[in-house]
Image 1 (cartoon, one colour):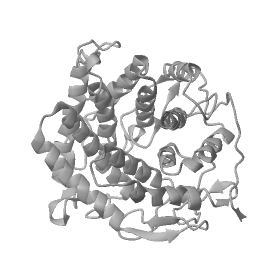
Image 2: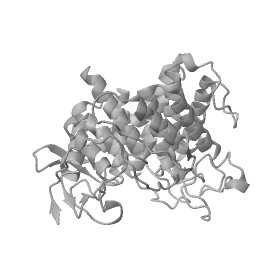
Image 3: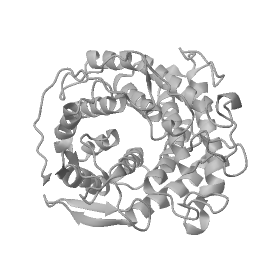
Image 4: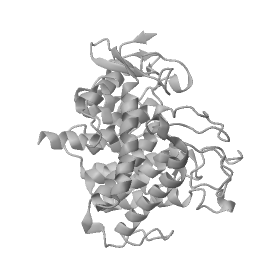
Length: 415
């Protein structure tokens, strides 16, 4: 049965639940809390988050857990909570996750631990393989941008605070990535640029197609000569945008900034040009778009990454994205996806339909969609209560961090 959704606004001080998060090792994880959905972020909320992350170890492995799994999401969550709190303990934990992720890059990780795998290029490449360990040759594509984006986010936060630069990183330097905070940030940027130069640029940027993201042909067997699906395309864009932001702070490598911008802008324009106008039952302007150009319908699993990418590019203030450019995407999620519930789940596709698999829908709001409440502040409470009603707050680091981050922004914008 399909019904229009109506979620009550519930004020909750604390949630307690027990959920296992795929890809994260918990050591009796402390529960996170949200004491209120309004007002400033409280010290209790910050402390509960800090206690939780100290019990959540980096996940095993060096593959997609750092992209689609909670390894990468933990980095993003710590970054957002550091923006809220400026608490160095949270930044240190973000650095710990970044260090672990970087150390497991295929060309850096020892063979006896699962690294040094031959990739489809026939070489040991600077990637985090996307295929299972038993698959040979290993798979990897444009989703590698996600790991770079995580590291660049951490570097950006460090570079924005010069008072940190010359201090030694509190957690030490087990992998020799840089003893001080600035040295660590510079190494994250260097390593990110290295993967762009040696993996992304030679294989996935089609100069003859306005620098659009395409997969190469043989020996690549994944979508050979096809455009990258939009969610994966945004992962490359996220990496380039954040690396540009870092280089702008450093005021260095102007040529690289120009080159990255010349890739980012046409790919954002390409995405926007391939949306189709739609209208919700409420009459709001919405869009539909494909999972991958030129056909199909984007599902709400993958569209979460599209939404995150739109926010990162918009927030940079650099790529001609206006509030009104992003608003229809927020309307699509809020009024079409959340506005249509089938068997207790939100619509599984951006046109309001529901299928199976990735298009099967969710009974909660994926954390990346919480960025869209910036454009639909009237929906923040409904989004938050969807998380509360499904008991996500106590254990989902990315959901709790994004809710508190948005709560903080809402409070500060009212002052």
